[in-house]
Image 1: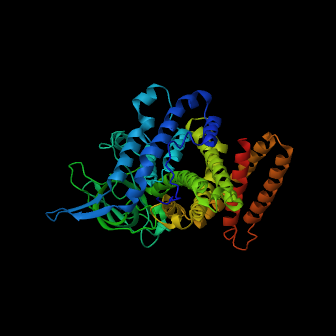
Image 2: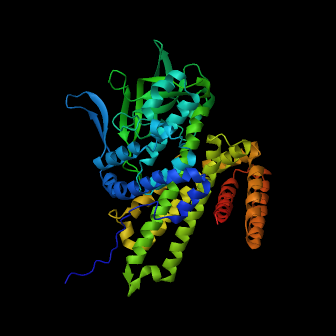
Image 3: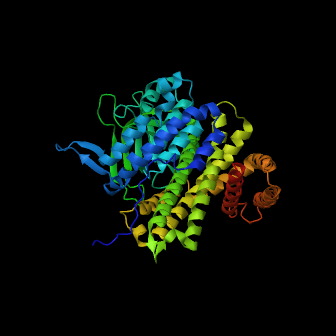
Length: 518
């Protein structure tokens, strides 16, 4: 008689239907009539992500992208070959409309809006599959939004239709080539140059960390000849992978990075050897334009992080309920049960924090918002990116702890969740960088006061007087910490204390926003 293996494997069926909390959250934020039809897209992505994407993620992670520098005849082609599992996810996600839905004639004909809450609700469900394609999706959307805001009519007419097509073979995806080897986050140290040659802009120089290197377009920072040093001298350019005649642009892939996580997406070092590029907007404002994409990327990063947290919890709960030890499921042991409760509570609070931030973004997109919404979005964006990325690492660690030794084996998904979470904490700004960003916001704007005014309104709306008193006390303590921060009581003009304050702000906000949903 064969011995029982005692290793439960989680096979998700529908991420949307399996999470009443998220259903209620979306019902709370979306207008009633809108939620009625939005469910179709949320439920559709919930099933697609669980049944089609999730089984393909580990195979695509194992078979990493391959760099093919030359064709058989010795011609330089710098092709990136992806595993079929990765390509299958990409095809279905883009053809679902995860980017292009808002530009679909049929969607528009029905008077529907693909604003932040629905778009990132779909993204939250997508990210639970564990696919790192959400990063290329983010950069494609970022390229689209930058062109909408800052591109010339000529650029918009030519490239926006390509970026929003829902035919995978015809659509163009995006990327962001920002950092260079000598600077990293010190973008002002960039040395990549732009020259006007024969009426065309050509880019020269190296880029060090280029994710989604197989993309058909990328936004690139480069310094036009004669421009000043520092970030003020950087212009923004749209760089096509291929020229209109089908020939490859002059982009040499030097090496594909051997990364800790997000392995199924190629990240590379490149050299631009006179690559044709198109200027985006005023070349004296390139860095300012790129910050639009960076801030959007931070939102995507936070949504991806809470999706990862949710998947880590689902994996851990399923395993704990089915794994027998000493005659009963390990979920029945107090310490395991407490860990599961913490994972679920952390995920719900972080999700409430992120979607409250998205609520301000959504109001602005609909034309219903104002300066207060802008202030809240500016304040919370670095906070949610910092906080959720760190909490995703914690969730991955907790899931592995519940799996025990099996969690350390790459045949199970939780090891990948933890590896990817480590990357999320670095991309689009480390915790230190984001904390300094928050410090600048607090010093240069009245966003802090707007935050506390909004918090006071939410506290007053709570039904339980004891909870009101709790949050008023917590609010005062946080306000005092921010005052000390701005007064420079740490001895470093706030630069030493800002990370602790960012964390405390996130803890306060997530608990309050979660309580406000009850």
